[in-house]
Length: 201
Image 1 (cartoon, helix red, strand yellow):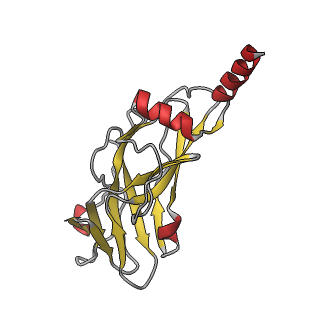
Image 2 (tube, helix red, strand yellow; image 1 turned 120 degrees about the horizontal axis):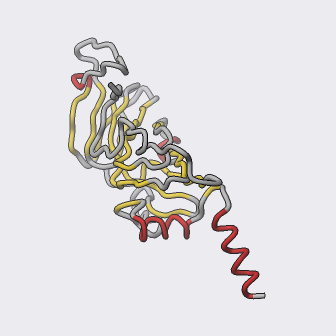
Image 3 (cartoon, helix red, strand yellow; image 1 turned 135 degrees about the horizontal axis):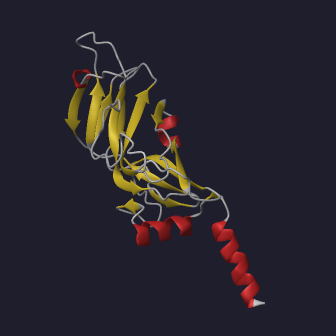
């Protein structure tokens, strides 16, 4: 009977779907999936971060690129100018009204070959009109996650460094994919710091 229970637990472990806290912990501690890794939700006067029931709440770093249009530049994703940003290293970043900032996760992620990660903004910021946007983290990708935070309000808004900003959800596929992000030498592979748009040549 004990063996049957073990077999069942093992089968659940290999089933596709959204992955729970104990799986995230095991992957982070034994395989370096998230570094640094915080094993439980941490708040105490801060916007919460760390391991949650079915996800991981990531922090934003103190590196910010604040969008500005003082030169009346055109935003071109195929030829993006760094002159469109003002760089700041600060504990509290002020996002101008109807503007956005780029920052990065404190954590460095290494995504397994059979996992796709989806990111959602923290509700504390969403309730203030601040929207966090991140494209999925693909199987085999690794790096700091570049985070885009939009201020949709007509007022300046604060973002706090080294506090929670977005939750990452880990979806396990039924098998490894044939070609990972690393296999195709994706343009954002191994990125460190805040990374601007790139076009692969």
